[in-house]
Length: 376
Image (cartoon, rainbow, N blue to C red):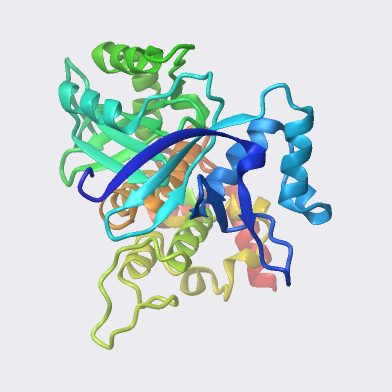
């Protein structure tokens, strides 16, 4: 990573930031600012951190220019200084990342990378101010779910720009193809308090890396995956993941091979989307629906897809681990975390109905929904 980007830190007053705006429009988040005498690209993360730091929202820019807002904050705030962080890309270009209180503790990029190198890490990814590192437990042991071998892992998400606290997320590693499923939800998250002081943040990260363990949390995450083996995926759950995939596709976050005709479009021609359809089934063929979203969400929760939740989780973790850029991984892992942290729509139905046909015939709620569709 050090070869691709470097980071610079500094302190200034908010009134010293000059915003480059387009006179023809009012931007909620202007993309360029002048900081310390040089123009830089302002990230969305910078504006979000500025809103949190001084307690104002983007709606203020509908009625006042950024300079008017900044001047007013400086005249009224007891502390109008911010600590800024600029990312320098190896290929050229500078991006302004999150802003924070200069008195708050921070873990700089150099110190964090030194700690990760000292304690060891399996994987490091970076995206716009956040470094996510994956770690193995000191005393690791494998276990099996549905015939697949897993090991417990945890991921440390550290903001190197000072905006937000570091967080530890529980994770399961499927050893067959090195798929990592991260529980990106409050249920499986632990925040690391950095405290106050120049070097306190480094000590907090060091303690977390040196002795993290959460047996109760890992047991709960494992139980949810085991329950996924006995639960059919609902159309609602499948469509929710499809929307995440479509968004990642539109934002160019998916890494996929193009077809022989050079196509990389939606509509079944992208490798990942084709694989998704093979996994969950073609709802137009199964139910005669041109668009599954024509069903209400309540009805979507009662109708099964072709696969169990376990297959959907494995598919999502494979996409996030091997086929997604760092900028899009968090959204897919967040879907996984949200799915496993609550009861599945068709929880436990796979034990009750041994095969696909039995399920389609025997479930009362599903039968009522299908009967309604046939009457249409």
